[in-house]
Every structure is written in C-alpha cells, then in structure tokens.
Length: 137
Image (cartoon, rainbow, N blue to C red; front, side, top):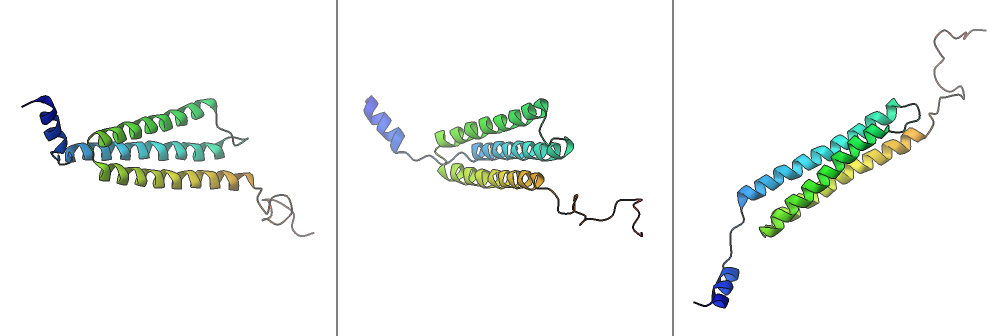
C-alpha cells in the first residue's frame, strides 16, 4: 500500500467520540464556570464592603486571575473537543457556559446599577425614623 491510500483510509474511517475525553472536558468547563461565578460573587460581595463601592487592587487581581484561568480552561477544553471532532459536546458545553456566565454577568451589572441608585428613604424623610429621634413634638 502506498501512503496516499493509507491516509485516505485513515481519514475516511469514522472514529467514535472519546467519551472519557468529553467527560474530562465537561469537568473542565464546570470548573471554569465555578471560577467565573466565584469571581462575580467576590465582586458583588466586595462592592458592598468598601465605602466608595470600588474594588481593592488585590480583589481586582484575584477576580481577574479567576476569570483568566476560566478562559484558559474553556479554550483548552474546547480545543481538545475540537481535535477529537466531538462537535456535539463542544457546542453544548460552550453554549451552556456562555449562557450561565452571561446570566452571572447580567446579575453583576444589575447589582452595580442598583447599588449606584440612592435609596428612596435616605434624606427626604420617607424612611423609618432613626432610633432615639423625637417623634412627638
């Protein structure tokens, strides 16, 4: 047999998808999703802690490193699935990751938008009376 015939047979022979590889990539995607949601949660929790509502440089670095690790993981797992020609797993895992990370991003943006709006009862006298205030008089 000559080389072109061997290559043609290798390309023509369909290979079943590697299910263990797909499972490993699914675990990598879930870990990346956890890191993404954890970074968003850190941002949400820290925005209420600071007086100015801004993140400290250390927290920005921590959240950024989680998001970078998640991006590297998703790209690596997607590359493995693409090299294995497991297009179904690649498509499903990527779509689910994008949808769930998008929901987390929307929650983060909405929280920041609501955090910047002043409360209705603040200094206009619409809220409850402060403790110890003289109400009768």
